[in-house]
Image (tube, rainbow, N blue to C red; front, side):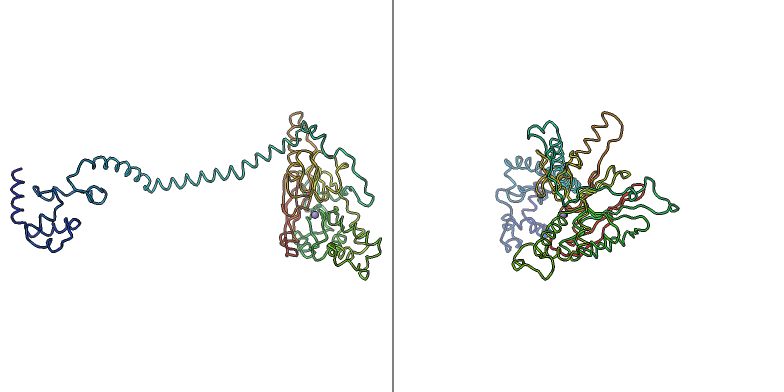
Length: 445
Ligand SMILES: [Mn+2]
C-alpha cells in the first residue's frame, strides 16, 4: 500500500511524458476540452478523470476488460456499484441466450427444424388429410346400409329405349392381345391401340399412329373412346382414317349431338350447303351444323354404328375391359346403365349415386375404383377365387387430363386445346403403356 501511495504521489507531482499519452486515450470520452488534455499541467490531468474519483492508485487498476460488452463500464461512473451486479446478472442470461441463438450450428438446426415443421404441416393439411377425408366419404357412400336412407341407389330403375342408338357391342376376340407375349416367329402380333378424344385433330392422329408404327396388317387394332369429331379442324378426315383402318369406336356426347342434329336437318331438308337457314347465323349451333353438313352419309352411317359401350372381353392383367366415352356408375350392370350419362358423366352424387356431367363434386372414377377395391378385398375374406373385376377405358374428361388408375383409364388429354393426344397401347401378354404426341392449339381452353 505504501509503495502504491508513493507511486501515486510521484505521478501526481509530475506525470511522465509517456503517461501523458495514455491519459489522452482514457479520457477522450469524458472530456471535451482538447486543449487541457494536451497541456502538461496537473489540473488538466485531474479534471480529465470522472468525478468522484481521485487517482490514488496506478491507472492500470482502473482498466477493465469489459469495454466493448458492458454498458456499466462505459456510460456510468465506476464508483456506483449498487446496480451493476444486478445488471451483470441479467446481462449474463441474455448473453447466454444470445450465444446459443447466434451459434452457427444452432441457427442451421433451427432452419432445418423450421423447414421440417412447414413440410409436415403442408403435407398433412394439403395432401394427407384431404386424401383420408375423401376416402372416408367414398367408403361411406358405398356402404349398402346407407342405401335405404335415400330410398335406393340410382340405376335400379328402367332406362328409356332409344331406337337410333347402338347400346352395346362386343369386340371380336380376334383383335384381343394374346395371353403370352408373341415371339417373332409367331405370325402377327395383336396390339390394341385405344385413342382418347381426337376432336378433329387429324394431323395429330396421323403422327400418333406413326409414332407407335401402327400396322393393321400386322394385327394392330384401333379403338376410339368417342368425341372423334367437333371442335377441331378436320372432323371428316378423322372419320375417314378410322374407316380406312377398320377401327372400332364408342359414341361420345359430340357424336351424339352431331348425329341427332344431322338427322333432324335431313328431315327438314336443310342438310345441303345451299339450304342454309335464314335464321341460322344467329343460332348458337352454327359450328355443329357446319360439321353435320361436312359429314357424308357414309361417314355419318359409320359413326351411327359406334355403340355407347364397347365390351373388349378379358384382357390379361386388366380383367374385363369396357370402353365408354364418359363413365360408368359402379355396381350397376352394363345393361342397366343410363346411356346419356355413360356418354357424358364426370361426377357422381355420393348419397344417391346419380351421375352428372358437372365438374363439381366427386369424380365418378374415384367411386368406381374404391368400389372395385372393396369388392376384391371383400371377396378375399370369403374365398381365394379371383374376383371378376372390370376396367373402364374412357375419354371426355379433358380437365382432369390423362388419368391412369387401377380400374379406370382416362385418355382425354386435351389435344384440341393444344395439349396432348394419348393412346393406351396393350400388347400381347397384357403389357400396356401410354403413348402421347404434342398437339397444336385449335381451341382456347
Ligand atoms: Mn366428351
